[in-house]
Length: 309
Image (tube, rainbow, N blue to C red; front, side, top):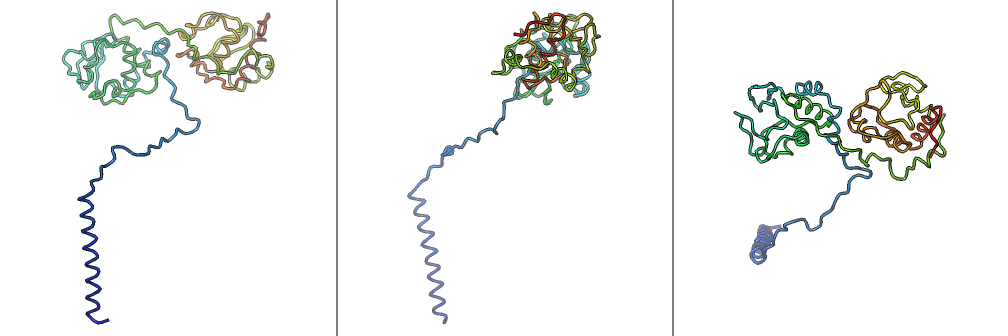
């Protein structure tokens, strides 16, 4: 190919490039596209199958009934509260304010300490529920707070800390009354204990008390000694939280009446839901048939068993 042909080819490519550039420039001048303010098609991603919302914390009023201020004091050291706060009467403010007499004190009002505008926006006094909200997540309670502490996620630990703060006063603010038992403690829908007891097996229930570890804390014989838990002989039909020689939690004492088959079923499903703040550490028996067998066994532990429903 001679040089003339090469020059023609180069010229053709150059002309094509110029034409492409000019057409784009003219198009941008004539057409002004408007950017979308939002995505035209929104695709919602569903939650994973079986995912449940997080369980709500028990009411602080119920947790305070069995809270331990000594554990709360220890927690203030473990989580680092003592690095910023003093807790003694007349103590100096540090990075955070002195916390003596904080329960019942006006929010964001401690002599000699400058609070953030975020906390000053809250008015009123530090009640037990408000202290519970604050300690759970300060940044959520007062967005913009200068308190950098992330919070105490465990509700029992928060109750222990608040119980300790409650003691830091010459005249401590009385605890609020525990709420009445909630209907939320009821057994799952469709599990009628009366129907289940009709085909329950007390021998299987007795075996279950050993498999589940009930025997480690309870005795089941007449006149048996109390252990970590009370003796369970004659429990069906017995007054709730009343066994000679055993000290029950305030959480369980809040329930009145007798242990009916229905109430035992609720209790054994999840003790912590039936009596928030209970000192019973057993998680519960999720299987309805197993609960019925255990309750039927408890029903036999009496000289005069309560009639089955």
